Length: 287
Image (cartoon, rainbow, N blue to C red; front, side):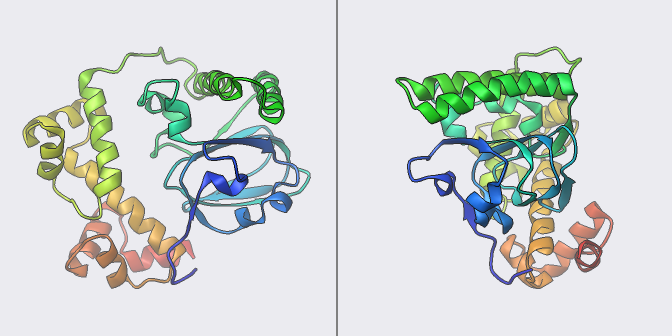
């Protein structure tokens, strides 16, 4: 652990001209990008499609073992590091929200359940599904390497197909639904929480930015998520608290201050009430 904040990792780190998209093999990945062995905060979406190999990916406080056919998801804001054997077979795709939304609707990534921040970080897949993905990934890698005319338009189209194929594997029996106005508003609320949770703690503050009443915001959160607006704010605060407890040596008081709490005892009480143990005990159990 460190007393320094975990640094952000930008997609440009994978190549000077790669601001929004990169794809490559997982074989000798750490030899090509040794910085992946160290903890960073993702500023992009990343997907590992593993055929076989050894090692693990640490994503926040979860360690995902690499074994058999598996897909691993990293989302913006996740703290992650990679420890893969050089012989690990598979693909690694990295892309930004902006890359995808240049062609598709700005909110469409939120339609993919496996890219949401509060779902599991991996998915086991069958050999049949792996083969299907590998055909698409071979096309993507070839298109990316050749850089022909309209390459990025083609890559966006391929990426869209890959994401829908993974969504089918993630929720195979769920029929796709168009999002209601209420669902779109809750998604906007969750994005605002990500941006402002350290400073804004009250549902009324977000309701004002969303141009709705606090009562209406709470009502639609219960309808869409079966949770109150206040709970969604607290959940995001506590997710960040767990990251800081796991990845840094900051004192409990320092973490409380960084998360916008004027009084550390209130932070301690909230953490214990929601997580079930005190911040100090949580840190000890994760070390």
